[in-house]
Amino acid sequence: MKQSHDGAHREVSFEVGDCGELRLHQCAMSNIKDHQNSKQAPRNDARRRRKGSLVMHKKRRRILPFVPSEDGARRLKQLASLASALTTSKKEFCNELTYMPNMAPRSSNLARLEVGGIQVLHKEDKESLELCRTMQKRGKFPPLLVVFDSQEGFIVQADGNIKDMTFLAEYSGDVDYLENRANDDCDCLMTLLLSANPSQNLVICPDKRGNHYWKLEYFCGGINNHTPDGKKKKNVKCVRYNIDGESHVLLVACRDIACGDKLYYDYNGYEHAYPTHHFL
Image (cartoon, rainbow, N blue to C red; front, side, top):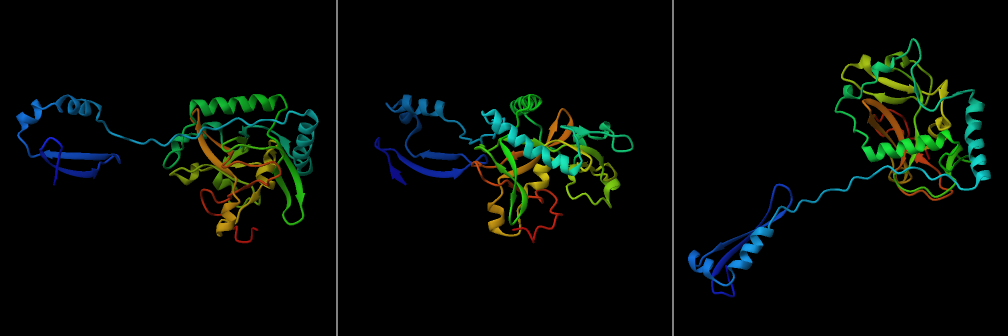
């Protein structure tokens, strides 16, 4: 119990509300009528008018469009290193999800079927994605190089500084039902849709068709997610989004990547079904 400057005794207590705001309670022990007629009344009224819930909202992180290298010769070198992977692997170029006969039809890719739902791509993020697709049609791609590493083999490294949350690629390839690929020896299948009905589960299969970034997934180093040091290396993440009612997989930088850094992402970012104990 403390005595205020106007002589009134007040009991002061604090508590945290449901939304995390701090609430202050005052129980005046003086006569209520005298308190209302005091000189402090206008100021107390003003305080009551200003009082409101203090709720902190976490700022949503927006997807950024990639920034191509300005030098044309450097861009050609990047494209040549990326395209060589498709040529060597004898893959057909395709920059989007493809729906082939005798596989899953496009009508099967319904994001609403996902167990627990898929996050919807916001308007601003969709604009960034469309800008990137337009640049790709003009031959401009993220500053990436496929290089040979003596310990890890062919990997992808940044050929320019890349900011956190920068769009790098969309995982492209043929869409098929997971049950059709139960015995598939392709080591780069990507989950597209997980439904309550296993027969509706979809995967992306880049074994015959894909874009320049098929090798981003193929050559991009996987982390050993069973060790703290392995997890620290991660700088790229795969994120599934609901885009116009369909599921898509985007690869996005999850922190700033400096020129020359190798790209790493977690093969077990969702289902934890890929053995990574032997990864460096």
